[in-house]
Length: 191
Length: 178
Image (cartoon, rainbow over all chains, first blue to last red; front, side, top):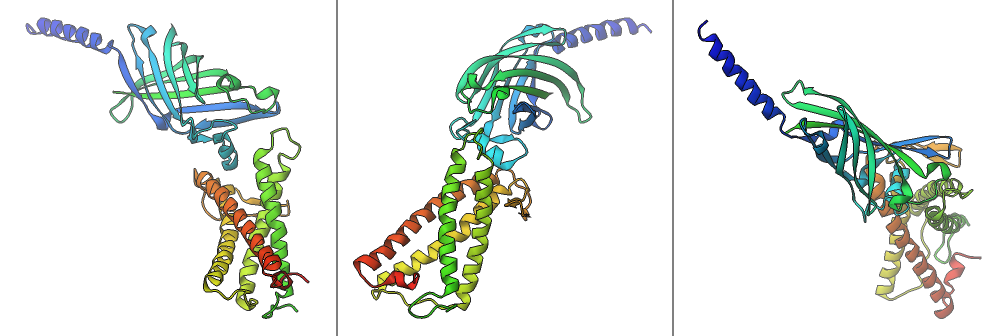
């Protein structure tokens, strides 16, 4: 029992040190098989066309002590657009829309993050179709913790609306389809 | 005369030739037109549907043409020089090859996601290969290049026929007309 007190002190010191270490900024590699960039755009005002980009990569930084420093960088291969119709996808990759031969990637880079609890509002530069413009994404924290395979994961969802013509994609799809919604689900594995 | 002779093409061969000639013109026009249509054009759906249907018809016709080639003879060539015979053979061979490859590449593009090709609303040509992401891209590029290659070959074919008719005055057109 005499040993107990120093042991507890040692353990406390250790856990203090550990919690300090935990609070350092964590970098997460985006898991492309559990991350999704979905879009939804009005079809003539009658319904919504849903699609996604299948080739996503990037990483994000989570800083528990200084959440304003949270940031994410994502790169998307524009040719990986998938609207569940091959001929339409081919059209979307062409000059009328994404022009993927000329602009093979789209990127998002964080410029600031406004935390609201674990959620927040993310602002950054979206480069698409050769044009870089700021966008704001409402971010919702989903969950974090150990996965069953020895890794540590953290995931968010996000939502924003963009006006296509701001990025020079102006092909006329009707007045209801000038803007489109983007929905994100991003899951990262801690490095 | 249903079958060809040494001097002229028979009825079947002529029917196939002129039917295919009309189809190729219609396909070239609708194929180009389809890529230029705006979303709100009343023909936005009509022209591509027409192109696919006519394309399937052309694919069927070229199979019949090649089958008939096995049965029918071909009239003698109006040329005697060796290089001219070779050029004529090569030109016709390439025309046949492209008339096979262009519909195949179009079919591969349209069926890349596993959907069949609708033919004038009458029936659907099923997708025989399993869906393959990205196939519409390379098949589409091949379709475009082969179709333009074929169009230039048709121009060459027509120019050669006119040259024989009006410059060499060897009565070539009589083999296919009249």
